[in-house]
Length: 474
Ligand SMILES: Cc1ncc(COP(=O)(O)O)c(C=O)c1O
Image (cartoon, rainbow, N blue to C red):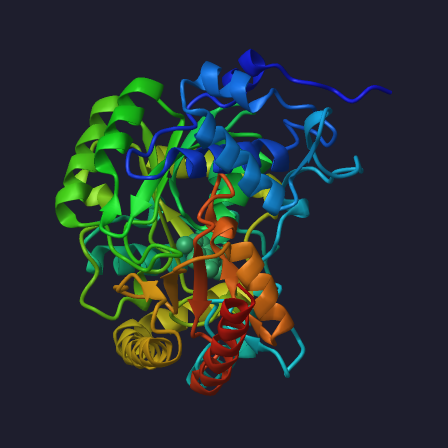
């Protein structure tokens, strides 16, 4: 069978919207957009691409921009160019698993203790959490065991406790505005299932939480990105896209953004809340990392800034207490919660009752647990920052408001290659592209300190060794 070919007009159509970031170089944006088309299968292996000259003229960019973008993709092993036979997408056609199953799971980590794992930012629970979970007694459970155990909206007492918890954080809530989920990841999956049809457009920041990208991609959504710079999301681009594209959903992580670790600045939050209300866009605000703040109290949620807008606020007990509880929630309007409950029933019929009873107890310890988390995380950040400054002085990172990782800009090199060299050198870090809907962010890596100070020390020393070797080889 002949290999497919795509002409410059068709490729330009597929690339629609590739150039939205005025501060990013054209060749990088183009390389990122082409990478996204290759990894999504829209440009299958073997496809013959248009010549650099023809595509440059159709996209109205210089030939140099095309040459640099194609060269980047060749160096990443995504394209193959042969004298006389043009440039083709590389690779052998193979069965593709649908949806997220083909993507890297940054939680997979390693069981090999000789490897310093700085890739996962998931925090271990604290010892006392085991005591509180273990204090749920047979008597507590008995009354529930006598019933069928399926509570798709969550146990009434837990919905009330989560509503109080939201209210204490400034988002006044009633119990029937709360749907208990199995972690905030299920909250994202449920909303995506309920709201998205294939082809619907979702606006996401670039970079953003990989779990959200998976949830939206699994529904066949078209992801459109808003650049997130070191000083915050580009609110001008965001508002323009809200008005011009009228996307089905906007996903933001305004408090302790994953992976960058920063809060959305209050002035930008107000502008965005105004545009969300004006355009009637449904907004998911992911607040699941709020408990990792170590620079101050939680800022006002977007739902309070845009009280009349369709806002779905997502929360979780994973970061404060333990991910293994699998307790999170969606807080929205009573009507929307009711609709979501029907989807929830067909997903898993409801969360585990013992976990919900444990969550109910744990919620009594929020202030104390937040204080402990904040001081642990601040110490972890300071330790990691000091080690990086000492051992990798030309690596720069964004000063975070919270979280258990640093979003690092590499002074040179490609994040995928650096992460691979690091793995061979005995340390795992996450390449920035994992957090990018366009497989961009290739000058960034996420370095986590969730594994504790000794692992961070070992990991950063190994990273420095890997970096020295790469420098020598250049
Ligand atoms: C921003 C964000 N959202 C959601 C999740 C999912 O967490 P969980 O399902 O345990 O609440 C994570 C996990 O790391 C996250 O960082």
